[in-house]
Image 1 (cartoon, rainbow, N blue to C red):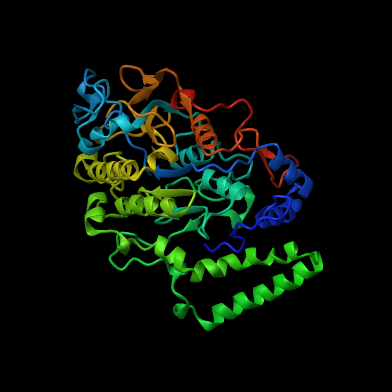
Image 2: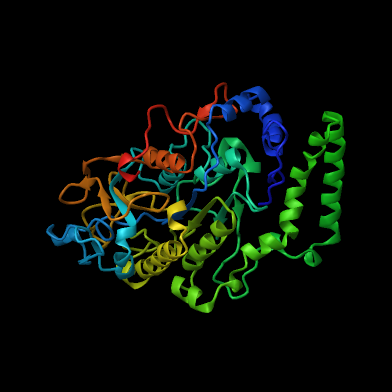
Length: 456
């Protein structure tokens, strides 16, 4: 969880940061030399913008027909039990399970033609939506937030990418979920909260005040510092090079940093604000995301759920160990409705929505026809995604599905295109190549993939 290479913004006389220098040295083993890294910087592949991003991952795969792409004229076994309602935009309807989201429809756009060509397995969809690729040939692709952190580093002594409350666990596929740094290496993994932000006694274990940090842990960090001091002295005698060892101290500074502790301290938020977001992991995760982005974190990922087994989720097969379709109106829908609408309103009122992209997405959709158990099964052929902020104009619908919500009939959008849109918004050149253990660098998105221009 703790990142020994977390970064601090100190620049050398030629504009190169300590982070750049350390990355260049570390990347040599992956086939990228210092000149190559400098070339990447010089070519404008890495541009620091003020744009940030929040991924709200709706683990389980929400049904498009029962959420954001209702088909009221379809037969009942297709349209499902929920009625469409009007929104703040006259031309957009969503289902009745989202009354608060309907009120902020002018602030987000709906992609109704999202699809991927992988198998209908949760893990495959998790990877596709968060990395832009399917897991192939044993090479695990990096999460968008991890790539952003790798390229741009941290701000204000905070991690560049925070994942909460915990990583996605078992969803049946026994494959990676696309929430790590993949081939970039574990040092670029997200900072994982590993705690429930809705717990009244919520604390981040690795951000406890110094008096709670054991002497043994402090001594270990002192030994690491001494080792780095020796290494830097051997590497270079200049003052700039001696500053490099401070990068390795960042793990300790983050642990003991009052700034970091304050950023993660939800008790600083008024009760009225916490009430508005909802006292559950998802709602308080949305609030903590706003708080972290406000203070300098570049990217947050909020997992609405961590598994689909024996837990009420979007995974509505209709029988145990999965959920019934009724949970959309009883629990899951209201939870999302409250947390998402609060986040969008809060970001807007604070003037942060223009610089913060919010993507709410699942890993696939659900079968158009309700199954014999009264639920819907996996369906990667079509589903809906919400995109707000970061310059995205709200109140629009991109793409369209056929009369039963089964396949895109207009402007199909791929997972890779959505990921490319996020990179573009965050200032990452789509031709940027990342070092990999293979013989060739890996581009952030496959050649020819373009952003969804209708969102920009």
